[in-house]
Length: 166
Image 1 (tube, helix red, strand yellow):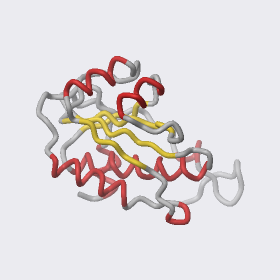
Image 2 (cartoon, one colour; image 1 turned 90 degrees about the vertical axis):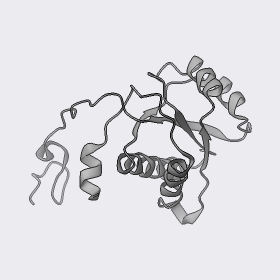
Image 3 (cartoon, helix red, strand yellow; image 1 turned 120 degrees about the horizontal axis):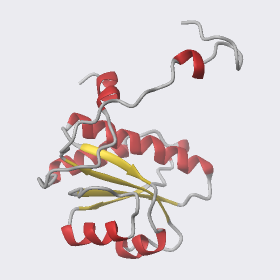
Image 4 (tube, helix red, strand yellow; image 1 turned 30 degrees about the vertical axis):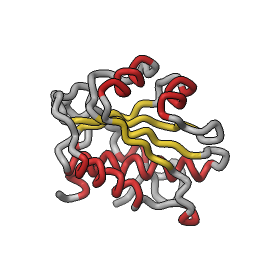
């Protein structure tokens, strides 16, 4: 699949079938994350894949933003004392979501959760932050693209506010 095709097909999916995500697919998603750029190649990120239905249900109890019933959650963690680590996590997360499109999976980034209980459920050490949950599975919906602002509102040439020239 062309990269731009994957970018244009990616949607925030909140309804999933009950078909489990196979281990080979999970490994490909995590490989995509592993190959994301990382400032100084420090790779401070850590990823936890969760497929056990009981644990998924427990995470859902403490995650107001988690809708539907994903068959996979990837928890994304790091020590966020350095702002670069957040940037690295964003790039790794997008790699996961784009690979999910390639694999026919849907995903949704979830930042609305109670960090303490979810960290405890996942055994995340106190000195490591839980930054994002990616809910994933085979989509049971096909949402239309959300409207995006035109380039001339968000991109400039040479100076802020100068019209974009292609």
